[in-house]
Image (tube, rainbow, N blue to C red; front, side, top):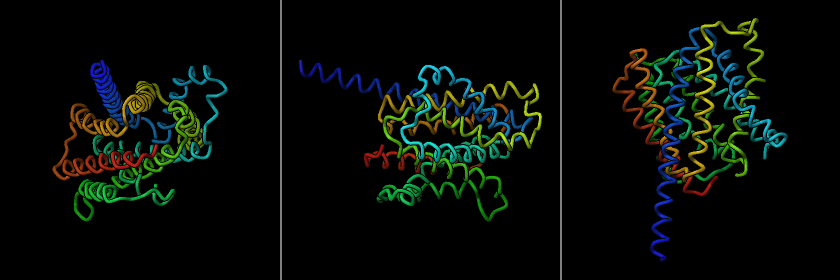
Length: 300
């Protein structure tokens, strides 16, 4: 009886890991599709306008949850960290949206996904998180990968890529803020506050870029895709990490890079050179090591 119960527990655990992995991989696909929508919308709008409308549409999608849980839906467990996360995430996405317009989709996505290699350093500088040898290895491997992608000092270096890297750095700051939030904080509430803070920050610049504010009709399909896919990516990733151990499934978020490479090739004929391919492998390896090492320390 005990063995049978144990077998059932092991089987249930494997099913949870499998379901969590599927959800996180699906989040990667949604993130890549959101990148496609950003590139399409960027043909008609400035990056700050795209981000403004992304947040407006995301807030509309989340409105039923806000109303259903009112007024608790707007009561964060830690307001300061929520604001820090929101501001950092908005700045990160502004850099990312610019990079998506200027770089091949896979490269922009990868530089944005470099955030895990910045998290240990930012955590140490801001909150004095411990840095063990495994974490330092992750950072070193990741930065070698970034160097291969940026190719500084060569004819292949593109200054726009540094803006993509800035999106990863700022994304790391947003991740550290989430890391320090109380465990009872809702992933959907985090998404709601990000949308609200994003609207607050981008309304003025969006009006300066386009006093009429309303985008042209050609931009609406891409904006609707962006609102839907980006919101779905956030919720699927958070749900997958809640169902299964985050150190087991969160590295699968890097599937977004490979989905982006495939979509960029299919839609725009974008290729990947050998330096970028090698850098991708190292950044992903560094990110996976950093995620697993950080979770292994028991931080939530």
